Image (cartoon, rainbow, N blue to C red; front, side, top):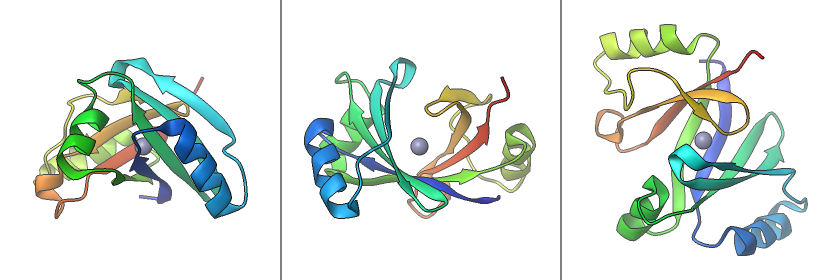
Length: 134
Ligand code: ZN
């Protein structure tokens, strides 16, 4: 894995949180993007080499809605940048980690992504992401 690409934070009101985190970081978000397949609206802040991704549910069945109902707002996942997501998925499956999808999915920010089940990673939801080649 290359670096922490971003940290995902579940929020219940993206507009309010955009203002809150802009005040906290001293800079505004630089983009917003909806990932309809995952039922989320996202907003990104630059943080040096990494990013902070705010996630708001767009429907009640969204994983973010379920997360907030169970645990409240807060840190939702840590995303690691990888060069070859399929190779990393194979490697981690062989190491005994549970992958949440068999194939990489399209994520926000032009990335291919795959999540690891938190039950195999000490309760931390891990996202692997790879830059998509266009
Ligand atoms: Zn993410």
